[in-house]
Length: 443
Image 1: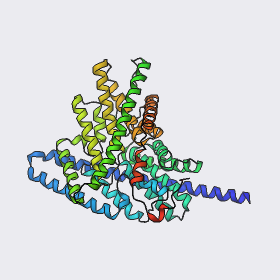
Image 2: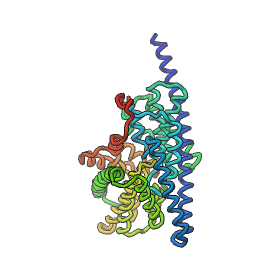
Image 3: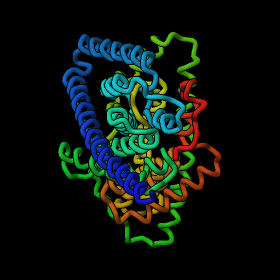
Image 4: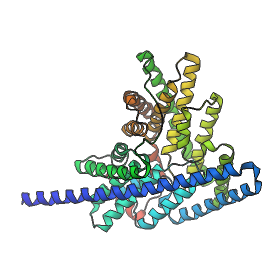
């Protein structure tokens, strides 16, 4: 009897791992095509604005009309398919908690893919990672249904697909695993760990066939050694505290903008038109803040902006990200958060250089630390934040420094008594009535 049970369990585990491999590979393909599409529409947008700009007002009016028309289309699709709104990570939590269902997963996967490309392509300050996570969860859910798996395997494969989505979006398989376990599932079992790891590695393998072996961010950062280590630890701790406060401000601003978009006494069409017009004007006047901001992070290391301009850039990106997310259009806040953290890190480094006489090598150093500290302050996932930045930058000599700022940022934000952003967004999200009563642990 026990031997038969062991064989049955072994067979189920083997099937789960094979399906995890399939989920990871399909998610890697989906996330890579999504990233490729985003790169294409971003280049197309930049070429149009560079080619015409203020020199051709009629063409600019035509582009503005296209932006507004796309916004209206996204608004209509969002009303028809509310589960594809925003980053998608709260929805994945809802599936794992059994408070929402992916009953229309095929159509939702398609529209999440298309609307994400269109919205970010029109310059909205949103990232690719949240949609990639949800796209992966759709793939995992679809594999579950196609192969007739039970509820436990469904949760494993949805988690596997979500982690694979993050791995495929950023080329960060370990961060995909950590995010799935630390943020989404929060209950670690050997089967879950192995299935998620298989899926993340498979997605990363597929993604690197599209985009090569280089790290996500091309930043040359070295750990500063010509500085007193105790003083260095001190300035890093101060920076983590600052990042934590700005992380709290970002979370509060995000929810305030959501409330404003929902309750301001204007029609939904007018509000969407205002947001899309703002996006058009920023694409024209300050293109650095348009889109997710990947290129902006890489440019911060070498450019020599004034301190005032960096503060202005941070403020505009900060507010425009909150405005973009308030629409409910498909797009995440992962990448914009990393951008904000990088800008904050450069501002802090310039202040140190100007007033304490530190060397310029601290600029890329604090850019890297800023991404981790700000991410952890908002998401409250210190292990994911540390591993993510390590994998995205390849700067493994920053491990101790990243762990330090992540831990301090986490602790300070905990003391500020603000819930993690995805928990807040999940609570504000609509639930399926027939599933809400079944909500429970994700074990």
